Amino acid sequence: MRHEHIETNSGLMILLILAVISIGGLVEIVPLFYINETIEKVEGVRPNTPLELRGRDIYIREGCYLCHSQQIRPFRDEWLRYGHYSLAAESQYDHPFQWGSKRTGPDLARLGGKYSNQWHVQHLKAPRSVVPQSIMPNYPWLLATNLDTSDVADRMRALRATGVPYSLTQAEYDANVKKFGQTVANQLDISQAQDNLLKEARDQNFDGIPGQVTEMEALVAYLQSLGTMVDFTQYNDDAFVKFR
Amino acid sequence: MSDPKQNAQQKPGAVQTTGHAWDGDLQEYSNPLPRWWLWCFYGTVLFSVLYWIYYPSWPVGESWLKGVGTVNYTVTDKKTNQVQEQEYRWNTRSLLAADLTEAANNEQRKAMLAKVKAAGYDQIVKDPKMMEFVRSVGKGLFGDNCAACHGRGGQGVVGMYPNLTDNDWLWGGGMDRIHETLVQGRKGFMPAFGAALKPEQLDDVAEYVLTLSNEAKPGEAADRGKEIFHGPVGGCYYCHGADGKGIPSQGAANLTDKIWAIADVPAQKTLQDKKAVLKTFITNGVNNTRIMPAWKGRLNDDDIKLLAVYVHQLGGAQ
Image 1 (cartoon, chains in turn orange, brown):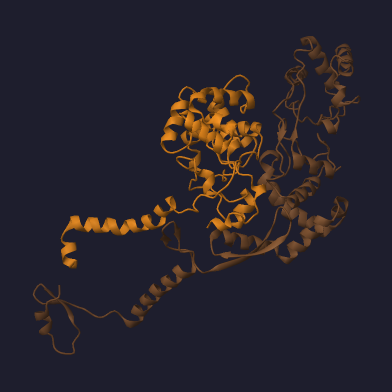
Image 2 (cartoon, rainbow over the protein chains, first blue to last red; image 1 turned 45 degrees about the horizontal axis):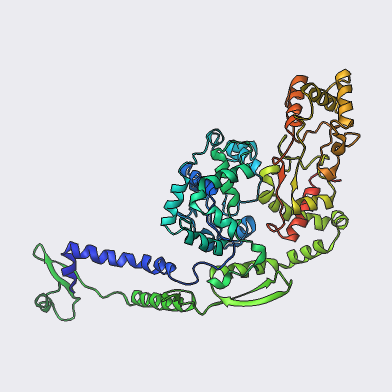
């Protein structure tokens, strides 16, 4: 094809430009969907419970991802500060993933279990009361606003459409029992979503206010689940080297 | 776009033009690329091919070209504690493993860590070299993991997180007790007395507790409170001790000093307010709000030992 021909036909030129610039994406992103070793084989990763899921929605609503990342990269300094690097398997049920791209605050990928519920409540309400040098905004309304739990089943149905194994049918439920065990499978059952949410809130009382389910409750439940699903004491430090 | 007819008009030996004339006689030379530049370009092409061969590169089917480059590192097997030599192809994760190996093999660090691991707590405290190591490594560990609650200097937050620099310890300030606290975490608990005691009895107990630290003067109310404190009705002495100094195995606070771990008494101006704050805690108890997370599993055994010594040397050593 003569160069002059391409340069004088803008339609053809646009098509050829699109073809050329899509090569990067095609080569780097598309293979991840079918390469066998993309998702590491680990025990314990499960979709969020209904309460955690609502907490995640609040995390997104408040824009936490704008200042906090959720991906620990395989570098020595991050390994020492945050713990084991993040695995692809750990965000396989995350839609959209919360990896983030900016760390104004610290990474949160392994926040779960690091601090007490009380600390999280106090810190979200008034960050500087526990960390004087913090520049994080206050989020006092989380404690004052009751959580809307009525649509949690719909939210799970939406995620189910993207491939998260929340169960609607008996067959899906049975598959979940096989894959995650009875306890988790019950949490993933969409028909029990609201009951499960209220029960988890009642049993754990993340926000420290008995008998009330606030938005704080959901957010703390979510934060306490981050990075806790894989038990890294079961794996040697190089266990995931060989997936790459 | 070149026009052979135009080129033919050029004198032989002269530099070729692009063959296009603007404004009648304006022409553009068509010089060949400088040879050095051309070779650099071919060089980069060759480099990219070598790069594809050495490093992981193109996707192929359900896999990808893995590259021939390798990385060496050592890893300690968590079950057998054996150190294994490993060689694996180049990737960011094996590179991290090699980086960690190199750090662990830093001779100074390795020697000091081995020394601290082998030494007992009393030996470490007496050795300035070891303490220097503990302070420098411990500072980082403390900042990353403990400072969010206990503050960067270990000063804590009154009413929420214990001060680690003073002499007052809920769960004991000996090195072994601090180590235990780090490993298994702690959960503070005090039963609620709101149902067991009448409001005026709660008042009396609060008054008595304040006399223990000279916040209130002894009197009739305090005497009634004393009876409840030391009697079967309240039974406060089970955990806080007959002398009110607290029992570390229960995580019960010392009530005789002016350090308040849970109720923020110092912030209250009047005796009435101080009593009110205490009454809230006696009425509702403490449950699920005073939790120190367990660090075993999150931190390795060496780090926990270093942290125990670090916290111990912050000032409140027992």
